[in-house]
Image 1 (spheres, each protein chain N blue to C red):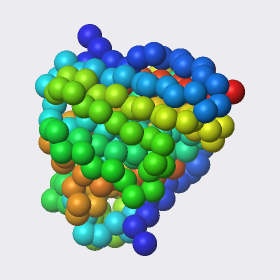
Image 2: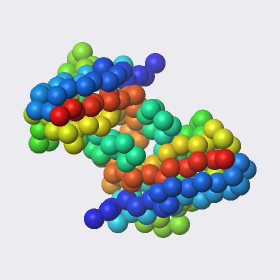
Image 3: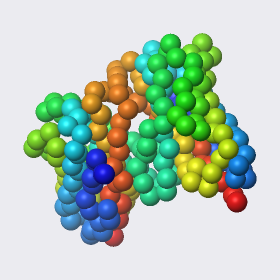
Length: 112
Length: 112
């Protein structure tokens, strides 16, 4: 069964600290992996998109890694800010390229 | 500048009363998507258009329909909303299916 699992479900850290969110998937064959940030009451915003040949991609303080062999991805946030409080969703594209398998998300709370 | 605009942002309607949600885009993207997102869950794809080609997900309820009269606009029609249709409805666009999706801020629909 094609699945995307994220951990932790929720995370609370202090402003300025770093954190890493995990994504494991069983989707096969794999096309690409995306990370989205969703603020409460808003639509998701794309952070990164990686194909199987890419193993790291950065977007400002966000760095995503991908290990296509172990089917794992992580999103590392450096020097967290209050505005990073949001849900972070990992989405994996199945071979039917419009078909996306969504993870349940990690809810991140940054405290001052 | 907003690139994917959804109207209205909030909609309250009565059980069984038809409702239409709208989405417009200024990106000239080929693909438009409609998602349903319930509280604390990942978005669930309802259907999408690749240009004028309509693709319905197998488990999308029959009372959900869509129209795309031109490249810029897409509508979601719910013919007879039930209480279980209370959710956030997200519209997204992409230049091609394997590209990142750009989301609007959604319409929060409440059925009373």
